[in-house]
Length: 268
Ligand SMILES: Cc1ncc(COP(=O)(O)O)c(C=O)c1O
Image (cartoon, rainbow, N blue to C red):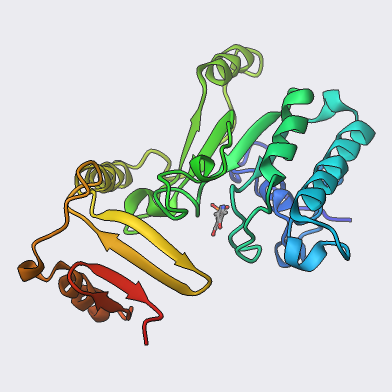
C-alpha cells in the first residue's frame, strides 16, 4: 500500500507524476514508486534483432507486433483506450529503429479503433532522424505531438505540445465541466524558454547547413551545403568543414572534415 499524507487544500503539485512514470516502459523508472499502474498497458518492444522468432522476416515480425497491439486493445475494450503513446524511433529504450512495415501495421490498428495517437518527438524532433520530425521519417500521422530538447538546441529547458484543432476544441468543451484543466508546471510558459526556442527555430529555418546525412552502421557523413534548396556547395577556400570540426573539437566532439566541405564520422 502507498499512502502520501498531505494537507487538505495544500497545493502539492499539479503534475501527475505517477501517471507519467507509469506511461514509461522502462522498469528502472517504476522501481520504488509502486508503478506501473494497472490502467497502463504494455506492449512488446519492436526490437527485431532481439525479439524476432527464428526465420521471421521484418514484415512478419511487424505484423505480429500489430496483432499483439490489436489483441491488447480488444481485451481492454476498444472504447476504454484513451490514447496510444510512442516515439517514432525509441531512444532511451535502446535506439530501436522500427522494423519494416512496423508503423504501417500499428497505424492500421490505431485507425481501425479510432485511437488517439500521441507521438513523443522529444528525442527524434528537429532533424535527429534526418527529417525535421521523426513522424516524417516513418510516415506517421499523430493527433498530438510533444517535443523538447532540441527545441532550444538544449540550451534552456522547455517542452511543448502540439495538437490538432479538434483536440483543442474538446479540451475547451470538457474544461467547462471541471472548471479548469488542473495540470501545469511551475515554470510553464517561461518567457526566457520561449525566447530561446524562438531563436533556435529561427536558426534551424535560416541556416540550412546540412544538405544530406548518409551512412551505414557506424560509418556516417554529413554533407554541408549553402542551402538545401539549391544544394550549392561552399567555396572550398572557406574550409567550412574544418571550421565546424574545430568548433566541435572545442566542445569535446571529434570527427574528420571531408574536403572540401563535409564531415565524416568513423573516418580513421
Ligand atoms: C523520448 C523521451 N520523451 C520524454 C523525455 C523527457 O521526459 P520528462 O519530461 O518526463 O523528463 C525523454 C528524456 O530523455 C525522452 O527521451
